[in-house]
Length: 163
Image (cartoon, rainbow, N blue to C red; front, side, top):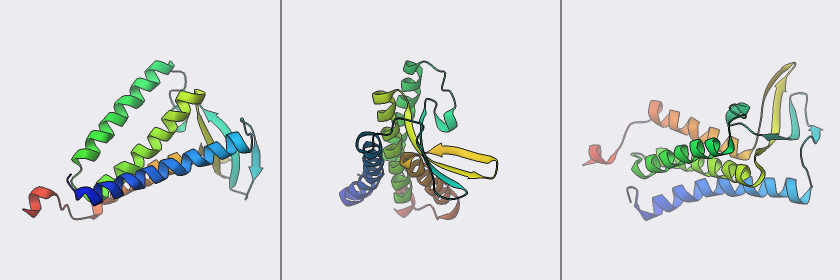
């Protein structure tokens, strides 16, 4: 284990926490509140809490692909992220990848169960509308931002350099 058992458990736990919060939120909205799509609550002039089913990947892209192709793409991407996580050279990279993996697995579970991903949060300014997203998407976004931060703003302290 590159960062020791404690570091690996912490990294895994952070990714699992993102996964768990997303699953809990979706379970509540779909099974307790009974939302099924189309529900809408205006929170502010720029934020709505609503329910849509996203059949695509990010931003609804590739929604017309056959299900088996989507699962193949998702499976390959998850495998690549897991391999990168195992070989991560910094602890921040490992945490960032854990977040990305946790969010991606949660969205993949939606695809498996429902055939689409449940999205709830909609940001918009005037007529300009951002995509509708969920907690897993936010967790993935945070992971990607941490990867960029680690690549561009932190000193690379990988194992080989410290020996």
